[in-house]
Length: 79
Image (cartoon, rainbow, N blue to C red; front, side):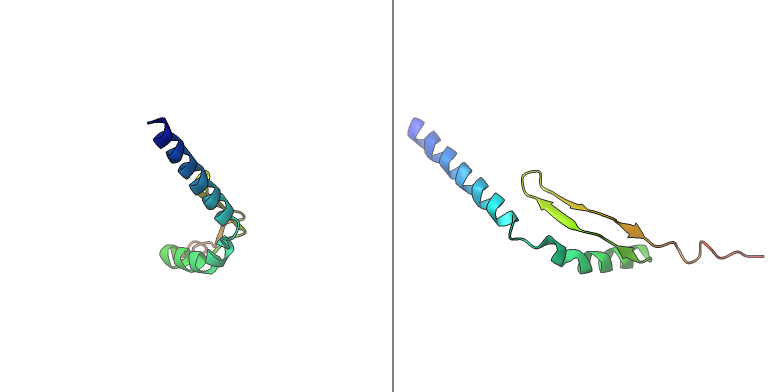
């Protein structure tokens, strides 16, 4: 039983090391144009996203400097 636990623990550590190492090789910013296009289409406004970063340990993707253009109809005044 102890041997099985030891093997399982080693396997988990190896998997974590592989995931952490591979997260450095994933170019998250390569997804930015697709993300901007999809968000712009969904909102009907131009969306710009800054630098993207990935954290495998927390399972998150973060984006800097997100901007969403004003709705074109917002500035129109009806007399």
